[in-house]
Amino acid sequence: MSGSALAVVLVIGGVVVAGVAWGIIALVRRQQYIKSLRERGWTFVNSPDFGAVARLTNPPFGLGFRRDPDDQISGRTASGRPFQVIEYKSERWKGWVAMVSLSRRLPELWVTGGETQVRYGVEATMVPPPPALGPGWQVGTLDPAYAAELLTPQVCNQLNGLAGGTTGLNLGIDADQLTVLDPPRKEVDQLGPWLEQLAAVADAIDATPLDHRVQPEQQPRFSFYHHPDWYWVDVDDSLLQGTPVSRSGHNHRTADVIRGRDGDGPPFVALTHHWQTTRTETSTDSEGRTTTRTVTENHSEAILGFQLPVRMPELTVAGRSFGRGISFESERFNDQFKVTSPSTKFAYDVIHPRQMEYLMATSPAPFRIADDWVWFSPGQHHETVIAHSSRFLREFLAGVPRFVWRDLGLADSPYPPLDAVTAPGGR
Image (tube, rainbow, N blue to C red):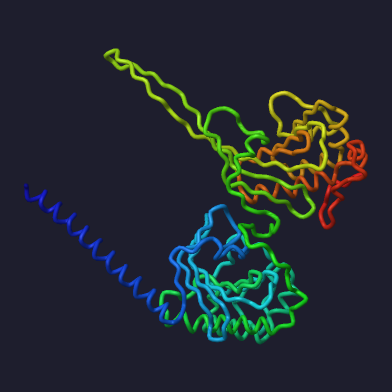
C-alpha cells in the first residue's frame, strides 16, 4: 500500500473512531439526563403517541398533515399542576414546547416579546400591551376585551418574572394549556424552577374572573387551527368510488383525507389521490441488440368536494380557455370566466350580476356542480386552499336566489346571507 493510500485509510479510520466515540458520549449523556428527570419524579417517554398533543389546536399545533411528537417529559409542579415538555415536529415547525394545565378552557391569547416572533400561522389581532407588562411586548387576541380581562397586573408581574428580566418569551393559551416555546429543557436544574414560574403564571390566570369566557370541551383528535369541525381521516379508499378521480393506471390510493365543515356551510371531503401508470420502453443499441424495460410513473392529484343538500343541474365555472361558454351581460366577466351548463336558464338564474361581481372579486379555483356535490380543482391539497374554497362556496351559495332553491324542492335557501361580509345576496 502506498503512503498516500495508507494516509487516507488512517484518516477515514480516525473519523469513524471519533464518530463512534461521540455517539457513545451522546448516549451516556442522554441516559444521565433521563435519569436526572426520573430522580425528580418526572416521567420520560421516548416516543409518545399522538394523544400527547391531540387536545392542542393552536400553533405550532393544529397545522399541517404531518405532526410528530417525540421526547416527552411530564409530571406535576410543586403545587400539583400537571405539566409536560415535549419535542414536536410538523411540516412547518420543529422544536420544544412546555405547557402547564389551566383550570378552565379559555380562548386563545398570545404574548411575545423582544426579538421573539409571533408563532407561524397565528391569526390574531395585535393589541397594545397593558402598562403592567412593560415595553417590548406584543399581545395577540381575537377579542381585545378578553385580553384586557386576562392580563391583570398580577398576571403581568408573573409574566415578567418568567421572562427573567428579558422579553424573550413566546407564550400562548391553548384551551386549558398554557404553552411556551423553547423552554430551558437542557439543564434539569434550570427546567424545574422555570416550570414553577410557569405554574405561577397559570395560578394568576386561574385567579382572574374569567368563568364567562370558558370554551366548550372539544373531542381530542387530529383537528385544525380555527376549524374545530375539521378532522383527520388519513386513508379512506372507498372514496375512490364516488369522487371524480383519474381512472387510468393502477395502485389507486388515498392519503391525507380530511372531512369537516365550517359553521353552517356544506360538509366537505378533501384528499390526495395517488396512482401509478406503467409503460414499456424498447431501445436498440448500435449493434442491433434490442432491450425492453418497464417504466413506472407516480401521479397524484388534489380532490376537494362539498356536499349540497339537494341535487342541482350541472354547472361549471372555470377560467377562460379555448372556446366560449355561456355569454353573460358583462363582457369583463366573459373575459375572465367560462361558464358551461346544459341548462342555460339555470346558469342565468345562478350567475346573476351580483354573483358575477363576487366571482370576479374572489377568483376561486375552477369548480363544477354535479348532482348534489360541488367539486373544485384546487391544484394542491392544503388547509388554506380548503378554507378559502369553503368560505367562497358558502357565500356563493348564499347568492343563489331563493326561487332557485324552491324550484329544486326546498322551502327556502339553506344558506342565508352571512353577516359582516359582503356576500352576493339573494332574492
